[in-house]
Amino acid sequence: MRHFKLLFALFFVIILSCKNQGKKSYLPNSIGAINTLIVVIDNELWKSKVGDKVREHFAASSLGLTMDEPLFSIIQVPPAVFSGTVRNTRSVLYVQKDTLNLAHIKTDLYSKPQKVAVIKGTTDDELIENLDNKANEFISTFKKLEINEAQNRFLRSLNKDKGINEKFGVTLNIPSLYKVVKQEDNFVWVQGLIQKGTVNLIVYEMPWDSFKADSTFVRDIVRMRDSIGSLYIPGPDVPGKRTHMRTEPAFSPSVFPAEVAGRKAAEVRGLWDIKNYPMAGPFLTYIVNDREMNRKMVVEGFTFAPATEKRDYMFELEAIMKTLRFNK
Image: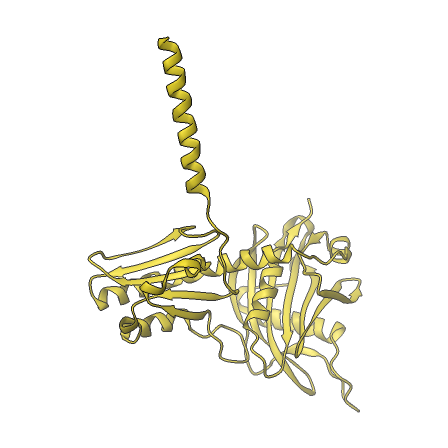
């Protein structure tokens, strides 16, 4: 009888534990448009220098675009309104004057996937100090979350063309709205039609020793891009003139260290134009190390959308390029 009671008690504890785990693990799917940030902050605080500091960091201009566009589309709500489905928003910044002074990120608090960045302080100055100290980390976290969300949405309908895979031994998750418009020995161009233009992805490779020295790295990148544009990306017909894509000569591109497909890479952001024709737009290039194949793998996205905001188009291209995987 004593053994029976012990077994029954153990069975009861296991069942209760499973029920509690089930309750804790259930979370609704997060919601929200890509690059949208809910800022939970008191209305008066939002109008103060604290709100100014939030906007300074999280609504700063996106790098490498032809128009002034913020990093995130911000929706401010007071704490009393932050309830119901609003709490299920994917990216949340919570700013509150409190008896505590802290700054941290919580994961999957109300929904999944979700990141809730919390800033608290006893004074306005403490809130501002915490925002200055943590903004870059929070922005990086939110951006990574949004990239993952965009990539998951691609999986609903992917382009089935095998040209990139067969030609370069790499895979990319490209949405089905993109179609191959040109293939050459060392070049594939995939294009998607948008309301007022096109979004474009190009893939090619360069020899491993294409970039000789750090001191000439930016110049070598420009030379590489302009050579590819001259060979493969013509502009509109202009009588008596040759037109093709090039790096906008008036602006030097920005270069950053990056990691793509688990490998060291260079991230290049800048503007392109068409030589001898008034067309221009932003580009984003990743130059990825592939030592095993003695090459640099290059993937680039660029947008042509006159008088149209381009942040989300370029963000989609970035998300596509970051699905790059090398075949084993």
